[in-house]
Image 1 (cartoon, chains in turn red, blue):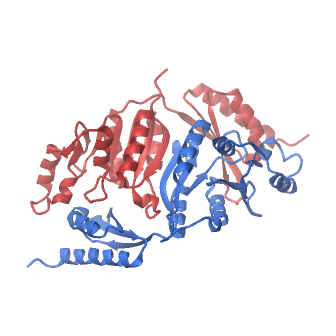
Image 2 (cartoon, chains in turn green, blue):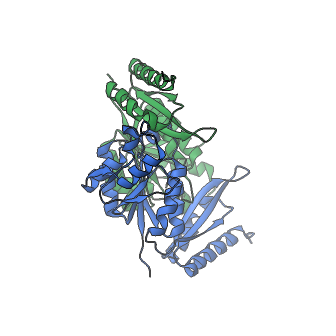
Image 3 (cartoon, one colour):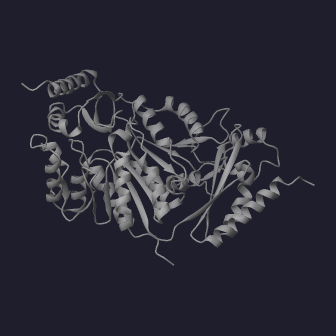
Length: 246
Length: 246
């Protein structure tokens, strides 16, 4: 059986905590990791505050195979992620010669100001995550992957780094629309969960097209046969529930 | 000067971590709290796992004035928030007589099964957050506010509990569209931040309508005069940047 690979996400940014910007990265990374066989276990969102970033990063990187950060790698004074990551790892940070060289090609001497040069700073020992279309690179240091906060750039970075990561058996999932209220299926669903301990069964209420309470049942497992067996039991339970009473 | 009131959010749910459901509650609560004068400091998302919930809840409730949780208060086996909160506080949990009475009015004896009765369980000493239109109540225990995961229900619960919370001086904010690249304003913006230490200045890059890099500068402060003074300096800096070079 293959190893279980786990991950945490650390979203860095005052703008998310103030509600001014609505995060779009957590959902994207969560789905991406599920699809490649990495289990997301925890997400934290912290402010642009060195102490908060260092503490959260150290907690997450100790617990999980990988930690993905988003935000705070731009050119302004509130972009303190690279420095905070260096501090968390206890390493130095300096202008990376390859990135400086690319910046010199892209910008005039006047444009290559202190703020822009700030974006070329990378912790010692980090591996760059970049491409011709990414200006300020992300980087990977130890088990920590540091990415941009702008969704399109973050997504490009995920595509670059993902093939280099260890992945495990994919968590498979199948969903059944119950056409029943959650309260009507809760008791038998628990029995099905107990009978299928190698699966994880979730129950998600929603209001259907006509505003009536409905439920999606989602079964997750790493093994297709186990998944199918649990789904069959869920389906049989729902059929029985809907059968006309004698 | 009024007290600073802080908060954390704990989102509970495997479905968020798998990426199957995209969270809509963090952004809503973040904006809500900012508007009523509570500073959101941290968000965590954890799985439907008692150990993970208890640990995160205890960390957050010790640090912040309030903790808001969403998710896991339904009738199914994966809804373990109420039990986990009771465990975190070291108190018992039982069927709440007022909630059971309401359920008896709403449901027939056959419908009032074990799963549904599960939703009437509330930790000892908790205060209910409910109304005529909310079936399963949220509750407040100590500084922890436990709410539903379904956005419309969570939002109704926020409206009920918010007037009962301590609030502080609102964080005011004003935004300026720079019409400049972040790298061009980073250096002078840092000087403005240094000159206005009682404000918090954020810089948020985006691509404008024509796909060009642009920047929003956001100044935040609790005092309107300080906010206006910093905004004036930002505006003057931008005007100077755009003035034709001699």
